[in-house]
Structure formats: C-alpha cells, structure tokens
Amino acid sequence: MIRNHVHPSRRALLGGAALTALATATTTTGTATANATTGTSPSATWPTEFPLPDGFLPEGIAIGGKPYAYMGSRANGALYRTDLRTGKGRILFPGGTGLVAVGLKLDDDGLLYVAGSTGVARTHDARTGEVLATHQLSEPTGHFINDVTLLGDRAWFTDSRAAALYAVPRGHGRDRSRGRSRGRSGAVRTLPLTGDWVQLPDVNNANGIVGTPDGRALIVVKSTPGELYKVNTRTGHATRITLIGATDVVNGDGLYRTGRTLYVVQNRLNLISVFHLDARSTTATLTGTITDPRFDVPTTAARHGNRLYLVNARFTSPQTPETTFTGVAVPI
Image (cartoon, rainbow, N blue to C red; front, side, top):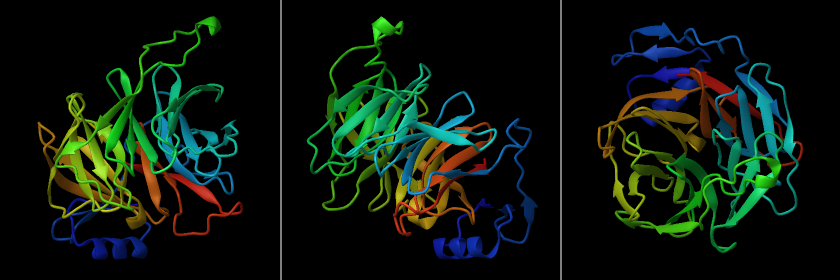
C-alpha cells in the first residue's frame, strides 16, 4: 500500500504504485518516508485480502458494527458475506435471473439496502439474506440505480443515468408477524437534481453518495467528468464542491466519510483520494492519496476499525464465470 500525503501528478503516482508493494508515507519533498502501520486496532492480525467466488462480479461492499463484510454481485444479484477475522465467506443470497446488486449499505437494525441497477432497489435481511422488500424507483430502462447511503429516516439511492436521487423509508419491509418492527412507512420519494448539476448523456453521472458531517445534506460524486456535489435533501439543489489540491476526481465511484475526512475511490485509476471537508462541506482539500499493488479497479469501500475494505471489480479484465475476484483492506 502506498500512502501519499501530497498530490504529485496522477501519472507519477500510479507509476510509483507499480514500483513498490511497501506502505510508505511521503513528505512534500519526497525525501523522507516512514512505514505505514495499522495501529493498535484489534483487527491488525486479520487477513488483508480474501477471495470471492469466481465469476462473482462484485461492486458494492457494506460493513456494520460486527466484523462481517457484505458484497453484491453484478452477475445475478447474489450477496456474499465474509468474516473479516478469517477471510472465509459464504453465499448469503443466491440471486436470480435478471437481478443485480451494486451499491450496498447495512443499517443498525439488520437491514441491508441494495442498489439493483435496473430501476429497482431491494431490502434484505442481513442475517438470512431474505428479500424483505423490492422498491421500484424508476423505469427499468434508461436508469442505473448505482449506490446508496443512509441519512435520517431514508436510504438514498443514486441514478447514474438520470438527474435524480431516490429516498426509501428506512425499516420499510419489516414483517410484524415475525416479531420485528416494520419501521417507518411511506412512499419512495424522487428528488430531481437542480442547481449546479448538469446531466451528461451516455456516461455515468451520479455514483457514490454519503451524508455530510452535519447530517443535513448529501455528497454525491459525479464520475464523469469527476466532480463532487453537495445536495440539499429537501430541494434537490446541488452545489458543486470546490476541490483544492486536485483538478478532479475522475472515475470517482464509492465514497466513504468519517468526520470531515472524505475518501473517494477512483476505480480505474486504482486510487483513493483523501479530502478534508470544510465546516459547510463546500470545499474539499486533498490531504493524501492511497494506492496498493493489490488494487484491480476497486469500486466501493467500507470501514471496520482502522481499515478500509474494498472490492476489486476488475472492469479491465475478462468478466467470465472463471474470473477470480478479491476483497482487500488498507489501513487508514
């Protein structure tokens, strides 16, 4: 893993990743380095790489308070759960014809929210994998329901092919007859994106999504041309976030935020850009970058302890039933 605390050219950065597999921290002059460590986290001895089923076609990953990672399949909507302590996993939900699972988020009540690509989202029981609800967010064609985050009483989904977000009530789909609360009720809400947002044709626009540190708005990455936006959840007004120290976040995919630190996974660049948000989340200052020789088009990230876990989607490799896939962890 290569950690840079300054931002040289992206070409130079990626070239450095090819030269070393050791974790380093680089100063402004590039003359001093220090070994990166995982600190005192109890996960320090756990595996930092684990296999997924051949041909799984992963993209999303979600982790809750327990040491389990949930990953979704683009091939058939299957869900796979890995024990982070051992790296061993199993199929939680087998998927089915026509199903897709991309972005995922795990709620603290055991509900797993899954972006289903073709106009739908699903809610699963994270313990059994059972589908508890299917949410029709849009028409099946001309849309790509890509990622999801949890904010307030809603699960918010992005649509990479339309200028809109979709809000599903959290807890919706629970069955009282099985001794579990049904949670908040209500209809799916469509939030058109306005303001600075300009939808581009025939490319992926909105992708990763997280809440702002104050919990009052959303941050959305626009993969093409590589921009960050702050979105008002009441009006849909999108304000472009000013980047300092970086020209763009092209190929921006999954987002992860802790406090005012925002991690942007830039998939085909095999890169995580790390930003510090100002108090209003209108400016993002680049504070470092993370690369790793094990990255093979990572898409989304989730955190456990002092590690970020990512899945390698391997978009630049053959996507066949025999293609191998892995999840990897890097210290933060």
